[in-house]
Amino acid sequence: MEDPDVRQVFYQRARFDIFNGKDIQELYNRSLTGDDGGKYQAFKDFFMLFHYDDFTKLLLGEAVIIMPQTENKFLDEDTYTFTDKTGSVITSWRPDNGQVDLKVEISALIQSLVNTTPYLKYGVTSQDGDKQLYLRFEDFYRVVTKLKDAVYQKEASQQIEDTSVFGNAFYELTPDEQALVKGKTLSQIINSIRRNPQEYGRLAFRVIMASANEDRGIQTLKSLGFTDQDIDRFWSIYKGFFDGESSLFNIQRKEDHNVRDYYATITQAMDSMFSVNYVQFYDDGRGNVVARTLKD
Image 1 (cartoon, rainbow, N blue to C red):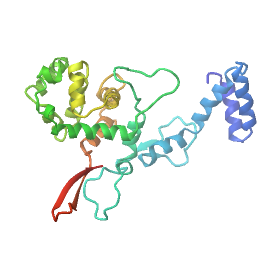
Image 2: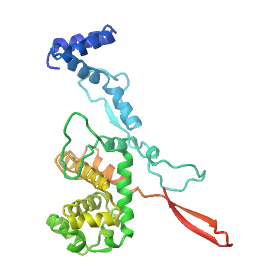
Image 3: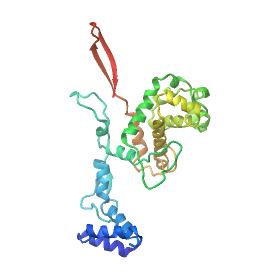
Image 4: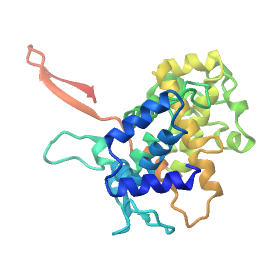
């Protein structure tokens, strides 16, 4: 809204409930013919700003604290702070044997970081058109747990330099990254996430994405259990968190050290995620007790 007069009119009318649904419908109808002078778009912009704090609380929940008496007011001061503890990933067995929902347990802040990350097709760096798609937390959880489950596959026991398995993935890494993975298998890199989530979380994604650059690597990823849609999810997470000017990794490198480290927050969440396995015991009908594993 560049016109201060338009902004002031909207503010006064909305504040005293003078601007009603009929006015909005009239503006909308005029906008269809281009006869509203941009006022309908201005109203939409104003509405978002006027209810910014409401949307913030809806998205972040308890992850954000808004200074009392400042909600939905236009002020020149910083009125937002983030809480340190907003829920945590499950770390122990539940004695009540109740249903476990990781989406409920994990913090609202981590969910918001995931839910505001664009969903991209592999190889695409931005979305076209007005309709924007974003990752769901379930996408993030699926990718991370499938990555960790891959350590049990035969291909993951091969060294990254093995071009017959990972193509030229090793040679697409930077010299510093090559030094970290040289002589290591994919399983070793994934398992190292536990030791250093910030470094090896990103490195695991780098190796996966470098492998996806050619047919040999794509075949290996699929043999590890990754579908085409999984590779799109990997790519979306990779671009949103680990690569590119607007990724959390690069933003954090440029920020003041006093700023909360959101990159560390998301990689620590990755470290805490595992797929859930349940063991079922049953009688096979011949007097034998048989055990089988059921995945979530």
